[in-house]
Image (cartoon, rainbow, N blue to C red; front, top):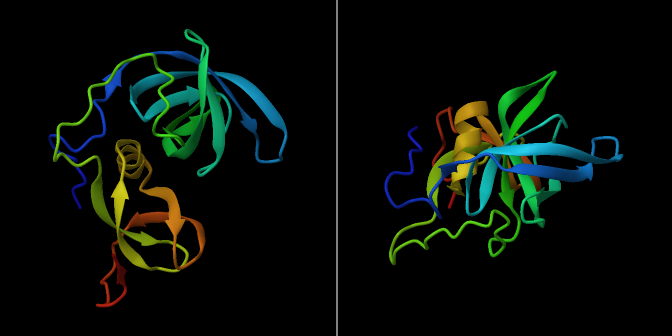
Length: 175
């Protein structure tokens, strides 16, 4: 399955830029953390970040841009590289599409251009297949890790999703 978004499919351009960040949140045991992080690539709505903290898919963290002291909540979409002793790389997406903590003015999409790609994915819990809207960050996570976290209407919770690899029965595909 090719999820290349092609020309004009992103909500904004992706740029390679290192921005020093502070990341705040709760770890898996519920303990608060405050740690350094940085971006590798970013777009108006998300980023690829590196931090020493092990993050959980679906977790919401607060990122603070240390240059402009602007901050926002971001959802962890998934890992982009396996965690190591020096940390891990994660795809994150801003929970409020109107916020822009980067201090960069991204041009809006021209009229008629789609902000998302769609992919045929399968919920790993209930095995429902669905055509789901995917952001740039979600595509990057899916291509790197093969799985990402998204809400599943059938499971009524956030579930792991991956490529739909098995033969699909007609009627099992949600639209």
